[in-house]
Picture (tube, rainbow, N blue to C red):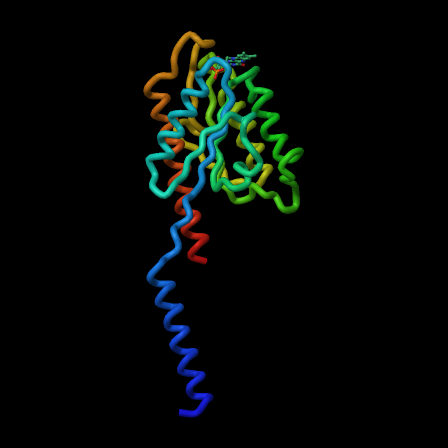
Length: 203
Ligand SMILES: Cc1cc2nc3c(=O)[nH]c(=O)nc-3n(C[C@H](O)[C@H](O)[C@H](O)COP(=O)(O)O)c2cc1C
């Protein structure tokens, strides 16, 4: 066998060995990350956040992180595939802490146009409010608008705009029905995030 033929044969053997090794050790599938960020003083929004976490954890191949809005690091925010934000209703709006959280994306985490680093991540919101009809929907809208401004893909579950609970100014615990709304929201967001990631990987 000529030197050239011997070299080609050796190369073919090497490539075959590499290919066999690649098929024998498939890379571990990357888990989809769902971040749940909330603000709560009296514990009601925290209880709903926990239910959202339980719902998201029902979906396999998902890593769920629960954190206060003040505690979220830029790394967690930017590496998340989906973000679900919870706020108490303060004067028919999100609390100042939650607004600061959204504003911090730009100030601290460099989330700016034209790149819009949060673009194409799935987003959703949940709230707790003292009264039945004193600003839960306007609060949800405010949070959803902040996500849309960041070019996120906004979805809902529970109520039309997200999960919500009425707490009677701290008099009532979040009801089992409202907790289940939160679980459904978490589960839907996690399921969609997995589907989107599969679609992107297939491209
Ligand atoms: C400063 C402040 C403003 C509030 N404004 C509203 C309001 O406009 N509408 C409403 O339904 N509840 C309002 N509430 C009640 C809270 O939204 C409610 O008690 C909520 O469940 C508290 O959440 P937390 O237990 O997670 O702190 C307000 C409470 C505070 C402290």
